[in-house]
Length: 392
Image 1 (tube, rainbow, N blue to C red):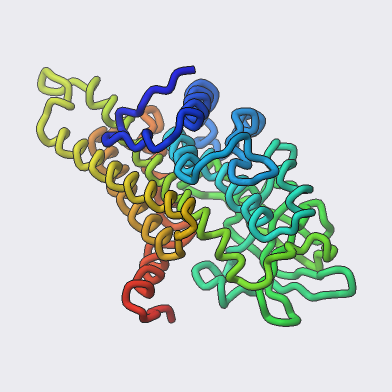
Image 2: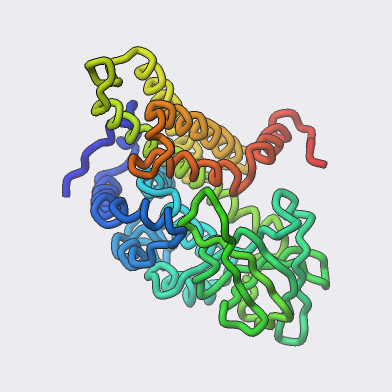
């Protein structure tokens, strides 16, 4: 299958990928166009996840890319970011599913699990045999998770007893395991636990009424005296600093996904503008529409440059929290502008699902907030460049 460059990659950043990575992107792009794109609007409208694509995503090998136990070939962080872009370019909900499965659930096991835990859980997650979720955010704790976590874990011999609640947990209505982060009653430090969702005392309830990422099955989780053995405690997750290692990597991929959402909206608007006739000619020939389209491609191009460099820094082992924080804050802000301009180009047709832009417009709001709000990421960068912490 031949690789065709994206016209929306205006400066040709895809050339950072090697030939094998490009071929993998071509296979993924074909699958998304033929199997995923035709069904996403219907599932979004019904607020249902398209479970039929889980096996296909595993078959095109987009799950488990970073880990020695599961990666199909040696690959770069830029490639893994581009995968997130391609997923989000078609549907942010599908990108979020993969981000939770691949980045958060597998990331927690891959970065903070023991060798035995990695060997047991990573292949099962990568194959799609089981679905994972990541339980950090709580009803009363979001941005202050480092200090304000209320879910507790109490050591009881060879077991741990977990009590608390989580909110906004993606994939959680149908996950087979959820990584739960809880504060140890012994030392007050945050620990991570692999919790099979069939465990007694664990329950997940779908959050209804969302207008963004409607196909993503977010849940409220309740944990009432949930007992897990010490063997399911992530052996290298001993403080919130270890939790942050996972978030550092996934935050950069959320920035890539934000670029994908911007591209998806821009491409839909560009196609529409070429077909919509007003005053006797396509609206793409009007100056004001071209102005909006150029501002969109400018945002996209600048954002790709930033996220690509952040991923290169990850490969080089020099990426720090403030680097991924700036990329996430910047790319999601530019995404928000781009989807708004794209919706503007469509006029009234921009608020119906028929032309895709409305879905991208709505879904952008969730990406703008999750994995660290713009404000919190700004403070992370602000602390790095001034030497002063402005966190309360």
